[in-house]
Length: 409
Image (cartoon, rainbow, N blue to C red; front, side):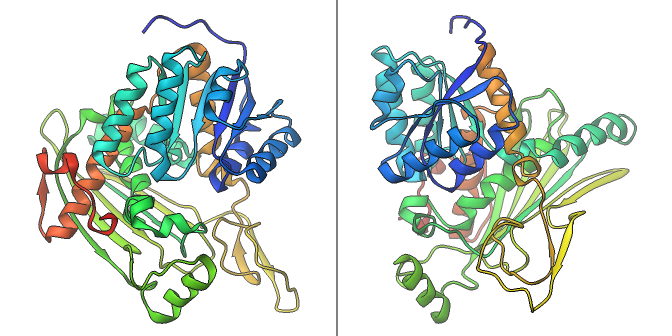
């Protein structure tokens, strides 16, 4: 790939206009040398609303386009942020590949997690972006969360030189269920909570176990063992609720709402390492809960997103409509509640976008790329296959190359 010139400003085009697009916009306020050059999504109303929000935040012209080709060819954007539902991403990447090949003046693509629904799709995403000659970034925000970045730095700088490398990473993410219908549909999303949330958990755990400056594939995958379950949403009361709110017949086509996985790995010296991940759409608490731990011979590190410094108490005399102004996936409007005062920063979106923007602007490959997205899909497919077979899966497993999880079949 020829060396790219450094740009004074990276103009980003957003593909998608849902919940995650709004999160990215909010985080971009804390990023220098970036503007939103354009917005495209299939919904005219939603793409107009996201563009209006970008302009209201002072993030640039945010022109509204009626196709990916029109935005890519406009000369108004340098890089694309792919933020659409999982089942659309491969077709969109094929279109980005096509328009780049015929002269669209693009330099980079960043894609939200997970990169695809299967390992085969993920490998095609990588092949397309590289054949197009584009820089690429995998948007895994938890790697860039302030607690993870600070905690990993302290552990590897202060503890590892004397105590030895860390050997166990635990990651858990739980909330009460997604807001959009497509998340609950296995064929569209690629699975259930394991696909939706464990993609975060396995990659942030792998990142914490990886030595600073080393690539994620410096750790060799050995085996995967997983259990999935339907704990809450197949119960008649809750299946009926989903049908009423989202038109989803979950009783007929359920996906897992609980998953637990263990990944065994080895470092270059043959040391055994473990990742333990738990995810759930069956957690009812203040809101989204992320818990991370890193353990080594003489040290440990832990983080919980709901152990906040800021809390508010609202008595039963203070009433209000349902909202999420205190924490994502907020489940109550009264009582003693934690407040995540800067969700975009604490969850990692601000530093993630800062890193991607600076890498793309300077013509450099970012620290997290589509290669890592492929690695995540290999881990997830190993876990799904283990849960389906009821036995441990060992890597490399050629069956994973075209494997589709049971709930997505």
